[in-house]
Length: 320
Image (cartoon, rainbow, N blue to C red):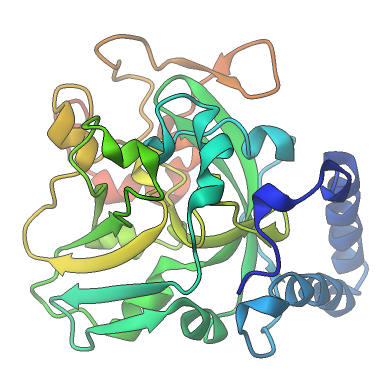
């Protein structure tokens, strides 16, 4: 249903970062000079073309929002070839080499637990109801590297509002697809499959929490979590679970896959906090992919103004 798999895109078809940034600058300039509607229309047309084969009706416009950063974007080739996705292998290059085996169509997401409207949503139906936004977020990995990526998707809060959680829903638990015949990494006991992650309800409702279906103006490549993944930009990358098939609203705190595997190293919250070292390395500095020199790691990955209030009064060394 996607018009093309990312692994089938030829290098000549990939938009170079310089051209993409020129388009972003054009859109920004147009908005500043009173041509915002025209600029938004151009981006909406591009996105509608990209998703035309996905069974979608006319897409609502893609908005340029306040969610952006001044940092240079990470190159598309790096974003799509340097990945943590253990379902396809433990090396950074394995997902790009093997994820083409995953069939992402059709795709559905089961919503269950403490909600008034449990249901199974076909992805194309869910997307038809949303206004897709481009948001540029930093993504920070616990292994001291980071990226800046232009994501395409919609706020997680929009889905949560739709299903109407009950008063018992204190947490949101996410599960990744389990299909070892296509996800070869699941044939090994590296983790307890399927992959599970979770957020506290107020974290999930924060405007920054995002369900991504694309990046760089294109459909989401398999190795980056196709066809739909979570992006939680103030937390380490492993919290941004990929290839989601189940969203469950729970009263008890979920046990995340990495917390189950190594509780001393990976806490439930997993907020980017340079003052709390990983047991095997410091988190105070990071290397942006594509750069040589390291930079200072920012508290909450630079999103402290938006999320610090969620953790007021908490001991962030205890609740790491």
